[in-house]
Length: 113
Image 1 (tube, one colour):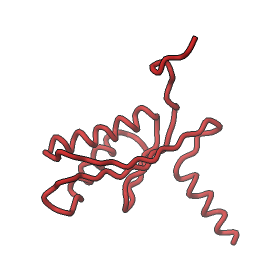
Image 2: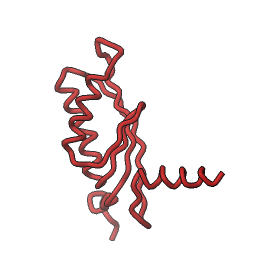
Image 3: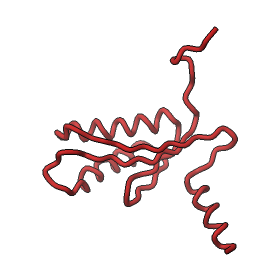
């Protein structure tokens, strides 16, 4: 018997890097909106790091994607009609690896140069 799409689980853990882009705002600066998104992320309890071109989230797949969707909602509630978000998501089944682990591994290799 074939699986239905609703019976296929999502991965238990992921890392998602996303860049949320409000479109049609009155100013080219979106720092106030990004600050609102960061407040939401802080309250989410997910592990995260903000960087100059977005935010990296880490945690359960469903919760990570829920928070990204909630970020859209809070900005829509502020009157921003259109939002475009680029998302890059990674998951693996052999081990749970944090975004810090990945960066530290490369730094370790660079020390040996």
